[in-house]
Length: 385
Image (cartoon, rainbow, N blue to C red; front, side, top):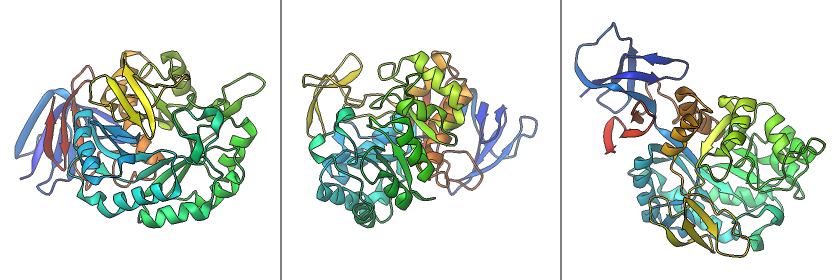
């Protein structure tokens, strides 16, 4: 039956409303919003001391609950989708790692053939992180599979995925990157830039060819120097591009995160987790792709001599709380950076990321300290903290 959410605050697409009533229809969609002084007739679900926000959208996540996208097992992916509800995430893009053509193609088929069966957070697309990267900033990616961008190879993956690849990240200095970007970037696929030692000029050329974002900004890229702006300088200064940002306090120092948010404005910063399989799991030994990882003290690091950060164990609900607790974003901005911006940046804003009449009623209930209280999917409460 249709009901109305009453809450202290609602984060709507263009305004944040104090008080009011949000209709949720009997078919699990958002209906109309009514101001506080226009109480509707019908069942009221009262959250008068809490906030209502759109379900969070994690567009860069490799694993959770002991599983990894590279396991190529849809049952495990579905366990991840269920686990994500505990993180306040209602839509996500399973994210691959650098690997062989055939392995990636098989994963595309697994997701493309089954994504509609997900019973938790909705799979809205696939994010390819690699394999068109460079070794200098390989991070926790396997360099033996790194190669130059190839639009025909991408088309083969996209066919296997039934068009579900929504984002692919490449290194601008690789041969053919500009041509690849021109061929692949569209209103359905975002090309982003990362794991790269590119010059400012190389990054700028890819943006001018259609690239629209930067992958986990600051991490795995040439830094900002006042004479050599590098990838970080491009991420900060290019107009109309959206920059991913990991706000776990380990990948990026909070004041560096503040600089990016203030420079780009929250409308162009997408909070991501880059979470690996140890998310929601205890500390210990894990594997990311084919590489051994140790999880301790809030970080995941390669076991090799580099001890590079190997993804994170961050949950998106904690990222929004962190940026507010660090005093680098308002409540409203934190929600925007974890819902609207990720959805927009990955070409899935028509499916998720905002509270809007007629959309699936995927939303979260937040306490006034921005901690997660409850997660709703299609108008049904699916997780209570």
